[in-house]
Image (cartoon, rainbow, N blue to C red; front, side, top):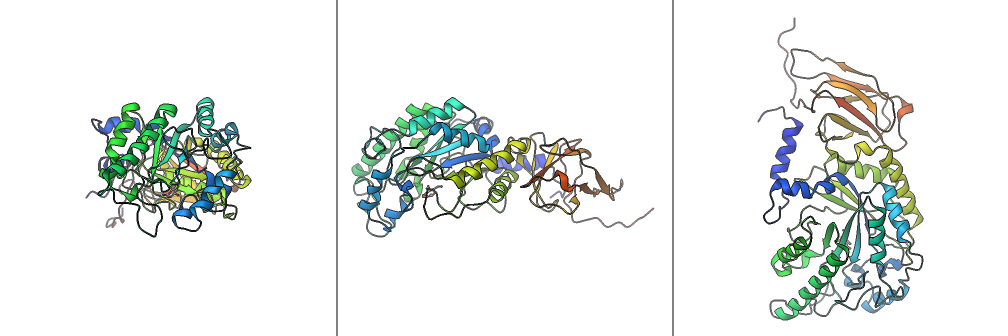
Length: 451
Ligand code: GLC
């Protein structure tokens, strides 16, 4: 294999061997167009909100794992008041964070729907103190304020329902779907009725499925579900948690260590240690940590979907508000190096996260530490036009050492980074190149002849 790979060639290789599916009758080019907003967005805000947001027990899992009885779990409906819910404020905050999309739980594994579903009886309208549809006002605000794509999380699993086979993690299933196919069909009909309601009432840009693990693609009729959603909206994007029938991968909680093989992916991440609001969970990530996670995803060509957990009354915990605002300060200052970037260069060239602009002729270096005077970049073959600090008008001086014209090994670049250009969280440098970024990736060359 050739030792020198251009970044462009690498990107093409990744694109052609990515594992993500194209949908029926769609060319890879059409898929890339459909996925365009998603691949440019980089940051999304996830919202887990439901009766569990009273904050005593985890979302759905607490009754499934029998930490709490089903009765006590559902008694929380009386505390889901949404009394201080201000969807305009939620959307303003999400936009301020710099997110370009948001995904809200329309229904978690407990079956509690946030909209006025006609298909079932468990919803904020029919069975909670709020006694109203809380999803519609949020969707309306997202559409009214603009700048955000809308995603709806939908749990395929609905543990409390009598026509759903499983209820508790330990213990027997209610029934076997192969022995009672009509009962299972009854459940699937319910699920698709709810999905139809969601698509017809809200026409989301993205469906974020969860809970596919309990049954196979065939058992869920996953291809049928996706086909139904696409018939309604051919541009809709579907995440992977529908037994491989979706458009992009969703690693959870851990930021990938190496770049995922799929061309489109998103890490979903809690802001503390819980998806929904928990009174006892004050283990919030710092703005530094969140920014690093975001930049780590950007550098590997993916997105970060950062979760928040509003309380049952609709207020968002102050700590979460503060993190989102600081994230917003950073994303707004560094927007050229956040949105519409693509994966950076392989590790080893520089001690920093990296990404590239679409043309490949600006290499962004994200510096999580204050460098001691300079930053070193090895193996950069493209000539440098200039180097500047993103989000400021400062140009930086630099020097190439050992740039020998007869050697295939490029010189080592040293960029001077004075302390007064540093951002308090993460400084970003733009290395502007005269041509798309090309790298030397060899192990060195023996010089046998010196003039
Ligand atoms: C998991 C959990 C769920 C959570 C989700 C978010 O699959 O079942 O509680 O909502 O991840 O990614």
